[in-house]
Amino acid sequence: MNLSDLTTGQIVAIVAAVVILGGLIIYLLQRQRTMRLRSRFGEAEYERAMAERGDRRHAEAQLEERTKRVESFRLRPLTPEDRARFVSLWEQVQARFVDAPAGAVMEADRLLGDVMAARGYPVGDFEQRAADISVDHPEVTQNYRTAHTIALSHASGQASTEDLRRAMIHYRALFEDLVREPAVVTEQKAWRKAG
Image 1 (cartoon, rainbow, N blue to C red):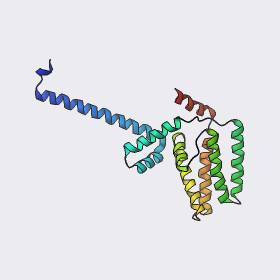
Image 2: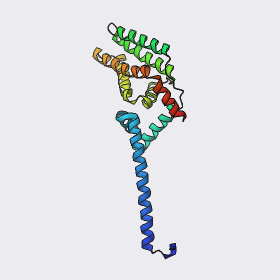
Image 3: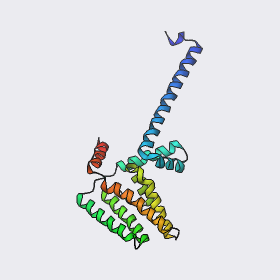
Image 4: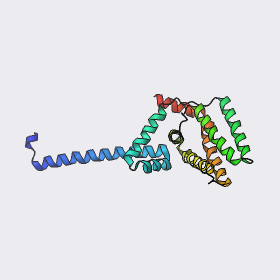
């Protein structure tokens, strides 16, 4: 059968079928991308990106850019010595909380910056740090953001001791994720990036 043997109706039907099939393929690819990003970043961080960017396409592009940025870092596990030193410093910060909650929260924030730097994360402005951390530690990123907001609130006299206690709990969740992450898991992530 030649193309010239087809009726106009048949040509329209073929074109419509191709358009529908193409649309279905695009829909399925977009859906797969959305599911992959929701899984990687978690619901809270995905929804945060949606709220910031205003639509799914822009939000997902931002999350993919974030992933590429972090994959370009030379992240590394902590040495056993660094891990022990950071755990000891964290215990000291927690102990100070009883007598100086505000100071302990500020120290916890600084200590997290030190841990991130030791792991290979750039430690520029807070929002960039939180975005970078969200790629490999999405489940605690919202906690980190909340703790930072509480620390800022305290600086302006708006946070209670209970708020500061919550900030320490949130900081601890990220601290434990960063410090106690098994070296094997970190090496597997590095291997996946290279491969």
